[in-house]
Length: 386
Image (cartoon, rainbow, N blue to C red):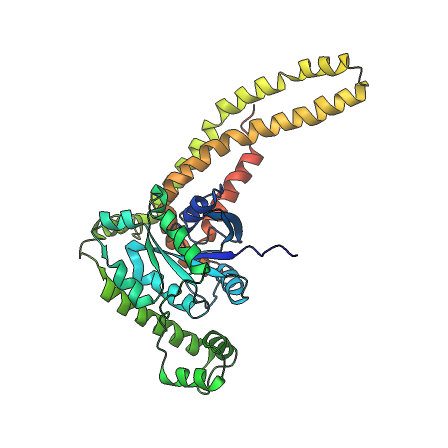
């Protein structure tokens, strides 16, 4: 008898909503958590446990929409529409819920078995943002669980809710986006399920509409419904983002934004490159200093000289050199970059450079990859070992 298939749960959400933190907390995986857009570029898998039951949790790339405009969005859309997932956990940022609702509404048209993880509730409380979770459940028609993933709050309830959903617990009918009359008519006359009809319309738009016009209408309808839900369920003080706006006036200004970014990144690289010299030299001295004892020990074992040279001069010295050169800068650079991630500065860098990168048919997110690549190229070309 074939083994019972393990349920598959898709973990989705916009970039920078704490999705990878939720994934790590639920699966115990040590996936790196970041704070810049598009960090996740492939599907990570982990095992999630609930009352002795195992489920596969798939961490999909962060995406703003199921209408793909980037490789990340295409990967997420394809996984969901292929029907491999039995349910989906949608992670939403409680501090800017309206923007996240667009993706949630689009996913509900593809898969009804959805649990919304309302993450960053602790940050929302700091900004005095109030969210009526009961009203949000009523408007969306699916379970909503308030969480603060970094502190581990709400995650047991989230896991139990997913289990109940898979066990067939009845849920209200998920809400639907109200599209313009001509699109709704085309969906009805197609005779297909709503998600399949929308996919077919994307391939062959109704008469009088181009593919881009259809995409704009679909997105606008989802944004309008998201705004209606946010107005019903969310209370945001007028000054909730006052501090962030003051910071952005400096960090994103035309006069100070670019010089501050270059200065800060240069400082990070300087600390990394020059700060790594001392530990690199220490590691090199002690690791390479073991070559003589290793040679003596292997000779005592009676190994031929060429084998001793292969193991000591070839294997050990190369390994010791690589560790001495690469480990110290990594141990310095990544904690520094993590501080910038947690402070929310890296998304601002991507935004600051997006216009310039688009002129080269790229996007601002790639600036962060270039920073990493340039840093490592410099280190390879000019290693800290003397």
